[in-house]
Image 1 (cartoon, rainbow, N blue to C red):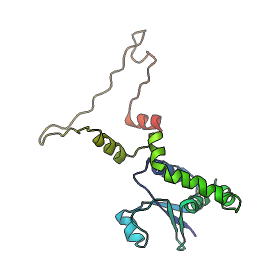
Image 2 (tube, rainbow, N blue to C red):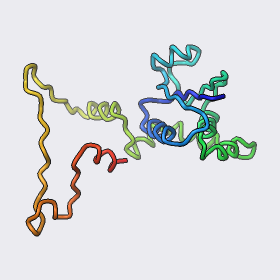
Image 3 (cartoon, helix red, strand yellow):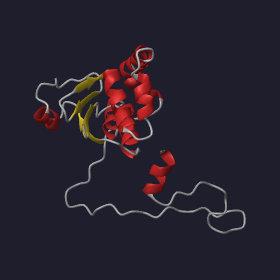
Image 4 (cartoon, rainbow, N blue to C red):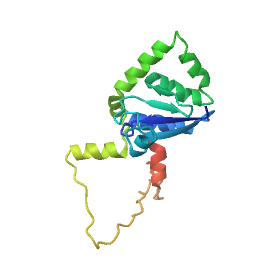
Amino acid sequence: MKRLTVLYDYNCGLCQRARRWLEAQPKFLALEFIPAGSDHARFRFPTIPDRVEELIVVADDGGIYKGDRAWIMCLYALADYREWALRLAAPKLLPLARAAFQLISENRIAISRLFHLYTDEGVAAELTRQGVIGCVIAPGAPAPRQIAPQVPAGPTGAPGSGGALHIRSTNEIREWLE
């Protein structure tokens, strides 16, 4: 076994965060992530249902793991967590791992909301549900231009010496939020 394909809920913020965490870890096995129910997932795995309520991992040797076993396989692929995967798969700990994973899996949407782990699609859906209407740029209108942020003068009169948080780019905003 050299590769695991992970089918996950693309619309779940917790699932997205878990994916990013898994991608950032050093690995013994390659991990490929495919949104469950996507055209790509249907093409690659026609026998797996479109509506997936739990994590599914497909190994390159044909093994299919669901729920708690799928999560244990993800940990098994990671260099720093293989020992944990082996411990959690042991007969005494597997029932606890199963219960913990089931609790998280069944409440993943609520957990995502609690910790504000929304995908862009989730934010758009929530704003639409709240009645927020997006603005539309009229055809032929000039493209919006970026306006440099104003940095307030501090007590000494020097820009930016007021002690406020000054963010200079969208990358800084993303880093600050993560």
